[in-house]
Length: 610
Image (cartoon, rainbow, N blue to C red; front, side, top):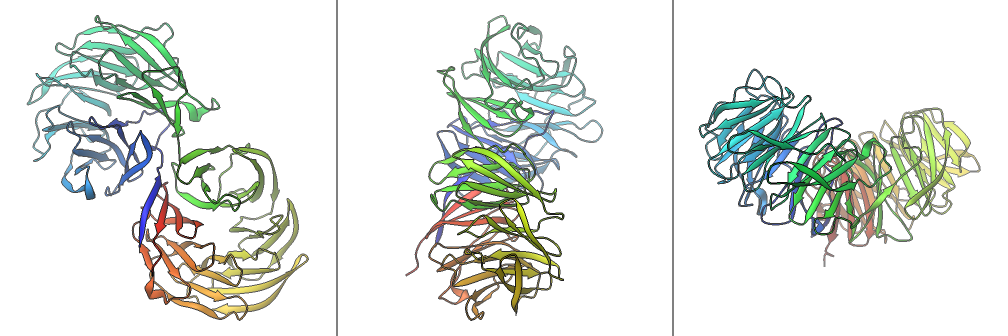
C-alpha cells in the first residue's frame, strides 16, 4: 500500500505586468490559487496541509470559495467555470461556458446564489452574471470596450456589482437583474482590482497609475483616495480589505505591500509598509495580496508567498515558496536523506526538509536554465542549454563559487561517480565526455545516437543507452572506454539508467514504457515484464537497500516493484503528478519522493507487504 504523506505545493503562476488573484476560505485559514491546470488549496496554519484540484482541461486562472466555504468556483483561460465541493473527492456540481476568452476574476454573491465573472471575450461579452445552479443570466453588462480585469459583488443588500479593466473604467451596475448605472474614468491607466469592504459601505479600485480610489457603495460616488504621501511608486496590482473594513492591504510592482488606515470619509493613509524579502530583483515585485483573518498574504512575481501577522506587523514574515514550472529532477543528500533538492528547468533549485517542507532556495550566481542536475555532499552539478556543465559548491543554504566547462555540444544526461564525485560522465548526442572536476579528460565518439547513461559509483564502469534501445557496457580505464558487452532487450530508445546502491544490479527504462532490472555480473535480466506504464518512462530510483525500484512515467503514475517478486505484484500510485512524473528518489526504505509537470513535490509512504 502507499499513501500520500506530504505535498510540497507549487507556487501561483504569475505573469509580469499583471496582478494575480488569491482567495481565502471564509471559515478557515485556507487559501486557494492556481498554477497550470491545478487549483491549489493550502492551509496557512500548516503549509504541508495541501489539496490539489486538477480537473480543468485548460490552465486555470482564478478560484474562489463560496460564502459558506462548501464550494469552490474555478475558471480557466478557455472561459469555463467549474463549481465543485471542497470536501472529499471534489465532486463536480456544475460546469458552464461563461465567456469566449480567458476569465480573469470571479465573485460569488453574498447569498451564494449568483456568480459574476469577467475577463476577455469577443464583442461586448466581457462580464457575465449567472445563477450558480442553472447558469441562467442575471443581467446585461454593457459599458466596457476592453478586457475586464476585476469584478466585485456587494456583500450586503441591495446587491450591486462593480467592474474595472484595461479601458481605465470603473463601472457600477444595479440589480438583479443587473443593468449599467454609471461609469468612472478617474484612473489614467489599467484598473487592476476592485473590492467592496466587508460591511458593504465602500469599495476601492487600484490601478497601474499608482492610485487607489474609494467610493460610496450605495451611490458609487467617489469619496476619497489613498494618500500619495508615502504611497506606491509602481503599479498597484491587488487590494484586500481587513475583516473589520477599517484597513486595506495593497501590493505593488514597487516590491512593497502597504497597510492603509481608511477613515470614515474614505481617505487612506499608510499605517505600515511591508518590504518584500528578497534580493530586490524583478522577481520581488508583488503581484497579489490577501487579508485572511490574522494573516496578511503577499505573492511576488517569482512566486514567493510571504505571511505577515496582522496583529504584529513588525514581525518578520514566514516565507513559503516552491516551483512554478515542471520539476524535472530530484536529489536526496546521502549524509542527510531528509534533505531533498529539486530543480526546474527555469533554473530554480529548492531545498525541502521532509516533515517541514520549504527550507529555502539555493541561489546560484549564474542563474542559467537547468536541463540535467546531480547533487552530492557539498556540490551540485548542472547543465543547461548552453553546452556548459556547471559545478557549484554548496555550504548549507548558500551556493559558493561555480566553475563551468564547455563540452562543445548539448548535454543529454549527466552522472557522477558517487565514491569519487570528481569524475563525471556526460552524454551528448554522439557520444560521451569524461570530466574530472571542471576539466575535460576525454571526448569519445561512440558511433551511435546516445540517449541516456550511467557510471558506477567507483567510476570503473559506464553504461550508455542508445536511440536503438541497446545498452552498451564499457569499462573505464584512465580516460578511455572499452566496450565489454551490448545488451538487447528494449524496444524503444533508452530514457534512463541507474545502478543499484549495492552495485550488484542496474535498471534501465525506455520510451516504449518498459523497465528492466539487470544482474551486473552475469548481465542477465533479473526482473522482466515491467510493462505496466502506458507511456514513456522518465525516471527511476532504487530503494537504499536495493530491494525495490520505482519508475515514473509520462502517464502520471509511479510504479514500485520488488526485485525478488514477479513484476505483476507491483504497487501503483495513480495520478501522482498531473502531466507526468519527471523526478524520483527514495529518502528511506519506505519513503519515495516524486516530482512532476504540475510543479509539485510529493512524499509517499509505502507500507511493507507481508
